[in-house]
Length: 371
Image (cartoon, rainbow, N blue to C red; front, side, top):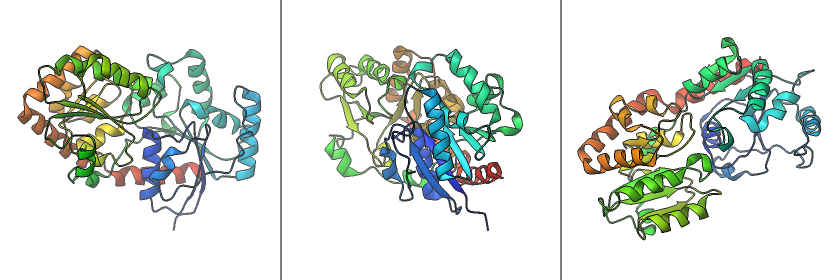
C-alpha cells in the first residue's frame, strides 16, 4: 500500500481557472491515500466547490506580507515549519516565494507546476522573473508542465535538468460530455430555438482576449443572422466586454452566462468552440469541447494546434480578429465539415487525453518527489 503523504499545494489564487479545475478533478479521481492541503495566497477559494475532498491549509492571512519579499520568505518558512508537509507543490509565478523559502535548509521536497503566464507576460517573459525562475526551478525536486511548448521553455530558458522535468498533458473525464445539454439552461439563456451557437468557456481576464472573439463575431453576424455567441465565465473584464458587445454587435446576439461549474451542461449545445486567447498552453476548455464532439476555431497559441485532430489544425490560425472570423464563417457555412471535425476531435481526445492517465502520472510523480 502506498505511503500516505501530507501534501501542501500553494496557488496564487484558487479561482475557477484551468490549473484549479485540474487539481479539483485530480482530488475527486485519485485513490491515493494522501492528505492534500490547499492554500490560496489571495484568499480566493472559488474552485473549492468543485471538489468534495477540498481541505484548506490553516495559515493566518497576515503571516505572509505582500510587497515585502524578505517578510514573505520568513512567513513561508514559518508556515512550512508549522504544517510540516512531506511535499510542497507550488503553482506558476505567483507562488515563487514558497519555492524560494524552501531552501537552506530545505523543509521538504518541492514540486513546481507551471501552467503558463499571465497578462503581463503574454508576449515574452519579464527578464527579472526569468532570472528568478532560472535560479529556483532547477533546484526543485520536480518541475511539471502540461504542454510541449512549456517543456521546451523549461529546458532552454530556466535550465531545468531533463531528469527533473516531466510533461504531463491535462486529462479529462470524457464521459461527462456524452450527454445532451441541460434544457433548463438553454431555455434560461434563450438558446432552445436551435440557432447555431459559437461558444467559449474562459475566465474573463485580459490574456483571454474575449474582446477579439466579440470583434470576430461582429464581422460575420450579418451573414449568419441566426447565430449566437455564448460566453461562459466571469472575471474582471465582464463589464467592459458587455459594453463592447452592445456597441459593435446586434442586440441579444452575444450572451454572457457567468460562471457555470458544470460546463458540460452547455458545451454540448455548441456548434463551434472558439478560443481567442493571447496566451495558453494546454487549455482544458478545448479538451472538453473536443470530448463534446465540437470543431475548434482558435488563435494559434500554446499546444492548441497539436491538441486537435489533424484535419482541424487549419482552423487554429493567427492572432487577429479577422482570421478568427474567417474560420468561424467557414465552419458555420459548412455544417457537415464542422460535424466531421468534431467527430475526429472526439475520437482523439478519448484516445490521448484520458483522466486516468493524468491521475496516475500525478500520483506517481508526487510519491517519487517525496522520496
